[in-house]
Every structure is written in structure tokens, then in C-alpha cells.
Image (cartoon, rainbow, N blue to C red):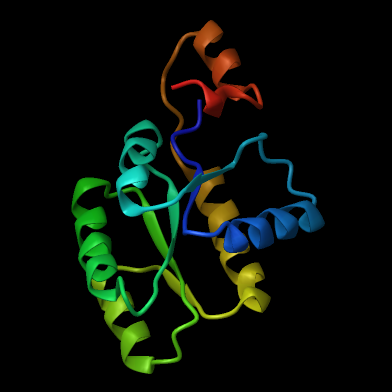
Length: 150
């Protein structure tokens, strides 16, 4: 079973839709359900506990900038195999610098740049270690609807 997924944490689903579209265009043969969505930082926690080596694509806005920087710093300590990628339409070089200093692996500021994080995320998920589980659990975990069951 994979220990990584692509967790997209945003309020609207716009970034996740763009990322899914790009994955389909690339024709990547990753298992169904690669992308999981969370509507807030609190929803990311149980997903990370289940897949601790995930890529977390985190939408950052002006209103939650400080909390997101703190969360990225904490991510590196709690889930050292996870990778934070920032999705932000903030046009502030200082914001990007602060997020990278906090531990973000990449920052994109436009939906046109999803290819950059798609390549990074696919490579990260493929390289993530696999959990040692039995055959039945492995088969069930790889089913497309496995993410619907906790």
C-alpha cells in the first residue's frame, strides 16, 4: 500500500480540479484516488496520519498566511516524509520567501503553473515507501473507492 497521496487543501476545489485535469492530460498511471481534498488544515491531519509521506498542496491567502507558515513548519516535524507545496495567488515575493523558509518544496501562483507541481508530486508519490501489509489489505487499499472508507 502506498504511504503517500496528494492532499489538496483549499476552500473551493479550483486547484484540485486543475491538478486532476493535468494528471489526466499527462496520462499518468497512478492508482485511482491519488488526489484527496481537504477544505481546511484540520481536515489534512487525519489524511496525513493515513498517508504520512504525502504531498500537501496548501492554498495560502492573505487571511490565513501566518497560520499556513506555522503549519508548514510543523509539518516537517510531525511528518518528515511529507512535502508541502504552496498554491497561492498572492503577488508578494516576501510571502514566497517566508513559505520556502518554512519548508515549502515549491510555490506556484497561477493555475497555469500546475505542471510544475504535478511533476514534483507524481515523482514524490512514486518514490514514497510502501507500507508492509497483508495481501487482502493491499488489494482493498488499491481499489479506486478505498479513500471513501476510513
